Length: 347
Image (cartoon, rainbow, N blue to C red; front, side, top):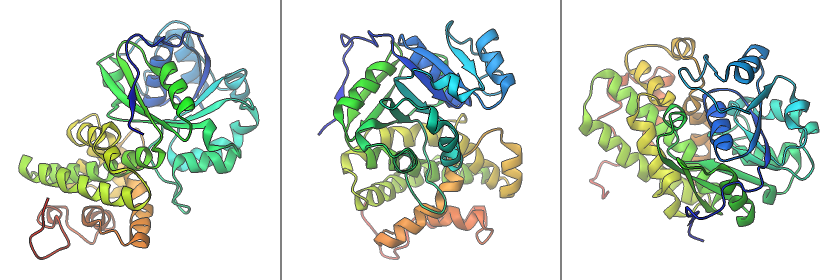
């Protein structure tokens, strides 16, 4: 089914739904603002009490979202049970590698009929599971109660209320539409669809391409090189996602190409920034120490390459990023090798 745009005349969260946002980083805090500006009653769960207090009393999150004044009425707490009490929808925004541990803490407090929404873009190391698969396995809930939101969604731009759009995907179109209705507001609009696999893999794969673009930017290469990597990266993304059951048109939409452009081109992108630091000669450890937040592309490369190998999908750009990370390729070597094929290939 093609995604359906929720038009201006669709009621925006007419019921004032009670929702919880798990995670108070830049994206979790921004999405709490999106939901509150759409009319929802929002409670944020923050791991640190100091951040929870600042969000609730000062209407700010100065650690992760500097300069943004949050809407009145957003509540915040470091108590998971308090945050989740009565929640009709639960939005998860934690680092992908910490999701399972967080679900084990908050799971007993999630209401039995709540919809659970992934705002994350990563794969679990060790299992190579997508985030909705981790949610289903750990919470033991059906796919129809799970949704994912993805798209060209740089947190700070959205927090500044710059117009953007996103995809909400679920095995249940009714669930996707409900989440999209809760989330939309005058500056954040939603499409809905059922291609969960494509929507999630788009968000994971574009991070790896963004790291590659950041690397070549860091070593000083120009727009031709970056455009070549973005274009060939989209081809890799599409081949991989389709091999795993995604619809090719998803990769040409907001969750694929749209997210790819935003992440590769913006200095606000954590993955682009991580790549640029690697290109400038920093080690992986030094990059992790320098950055304030997680660059999901770095932790997704190994599981993506393992899944690609199992399906026989060639991913030369992703492989070269992995080679830079493990020190077997000089960052300057990533650009001339955009394909594993020696003969000329079509676009």
